[in-house]
Image (cartoon, rainbow, N blue to C red; front, side):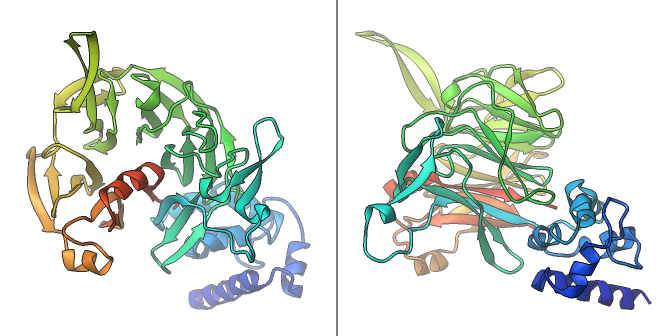
Length: 404
């Protein structure tokens, strides 16, 4: 009996995905309104949600929203999301910030070379396509890419040097710079991947404008620090849509990373500013940080701790199963840090044969960013020159999304 019900609902969903204009779908959609309407006639909503909708691909949810008010309500009020979390039916996606694709057009023209957007004064402005950026989601299940729409009123589509973080099935883009006018932003936008209309929605703006900064998640809140805002740090409560200031960082840093390890939020790596004297007076210099900082949300304070990174220079850090993996730039292996033993060990050497097939030579390729996907490490590598690596590292980022 259960297999028959599953097959019937599966056939129904297949019909929905193929055509929402079929007679059966139209009849069902017009059969009533309200949250209590049956999602599938003759079958309880709990069975439909728990046994079927927890297993459909995340992309299908956007199609199902158009079936009826009841379907849209079940998805929008996060009943489907809660069921997917409850049944551990999560689906992992990888998000990548990249240059927008070159317009496919015929003869070159001004209209082809420039994209019309709306600036903050609601006036139409022309933006060259090479200044346009986008976010695409990679689905490891079917190995497909899906480009998200540009953020409204962001002339470059996606701000460069912005912060990106996932929390509760939602993707947040924070701050960053406008590519066209170098304006630093404090606006925050959210894309709901499981219970939204498929478009960017504005959230409360950060208290400070900032770019080129790390962000992390701790206790269900988003924390940002440093960057162009100096020592200032702040925390976002998504339930209240509210930003609150928190204790400042102890030291000015650049190019640092923020990770959650052993239920603590670490600021690692980068360069720390020091003040020194020369013949012309006081000057600031930056040197590789030989210590880390940890934030204690209960006491709202930062404290210095010994540096956990192995070596100096640029690091690409990923936390998997409570361990910190390091793709050190220009290195030939991957090392892993165990917080329980406070030690680094060799995980495995980098497979240069595979990298050479991508065009790398003489150890020139490095992982400029990486993430965890279902217990495995995904790395974005650049097989070109070091200058290109540094450039891409500024405009591109790879992050872990878990839209449930």
